[in-house]
Amino acid sequence: MKTLLTYSSKTGNTKKVAEGIHKILPDDSTLASVEENLNPEQFDLIIIGFWVDKGTADEKAINYMKTIKGKKIGLFGTLGAYPDSEHAKQSMIRVKELIEPQNEVLAEFLCQGKIDPNLTKKFEKLPPDHPHAMTEERRKRHLEASKHPNEDDIKEAQGIFKELLSSLD
Image (cartoon, rainbow, N blue to C red; front, top):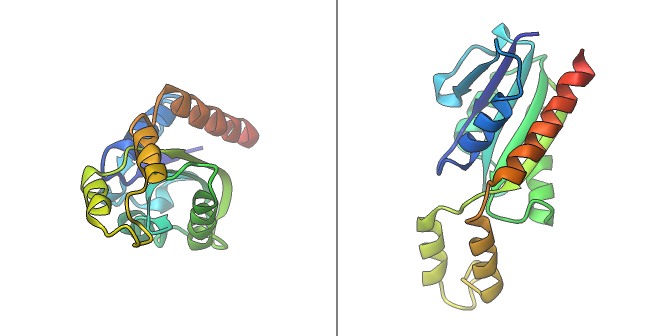
């Protein structure tokens, strides 16, 4: 089974997870940025990484996803929010809606990732009554996000995609 692991990464979080997942894939698997725009028709399994932007995959990942038809898919992403939050759940649902029904999503993984420092600065400048203003809880989440993706996140992602590979054997 010919496998492509492709990803979009703004701050390096998604790339780090992609590299971790790639270590457990068969030796002949291809690792590439979505910007390389590899032809999805050449692959049987496509694992796509994205960073969450405004509640869905980032634009570069979305544009690549639109080129994929009739494939087995694995999805993984990084986001500043907690991966078990409602925002994370809804984000993955939206991403799956982008890729289905033309493809079959067989595995999915989300983990927290460092937030772009420019975004944090933007939140800090917002007035206190703004819905995205920097609150104490948001500050704690940004601090926690700065510790991710970590080794445990990578191991969890590897476990999910090892299981996916086993199910295809």
